[in-house]
Length: 122
Image (cartoon, rainbow, N blue to C red; front, top):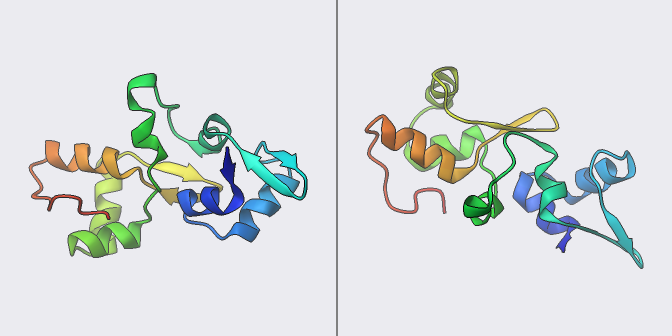
């Protein structure tokens, strides 16, 4: 089971935001004592994107990236990342915030022959 802090890190949000979403019923969580715990399927259900299939479960446990982080890691502008989104780069919408699974981004950019350094998002 995941803690509020782990879910916040995965989404790129603050823990307070995750707690607020739990209290609002936007994230399923179990309260154990004074802390909330969540499971991956409930976390993924908050992301506007396909649910991972068995073979790809671990790749969807990676923390999601924001546009600014992708731009910085690849040394391109945020506008370039926005153009990639317009061209079909896969996104995951998390409570109105555009986020990206690093493996989906890597696969998409490699299909377009973009040169990526190994482990570029870490």
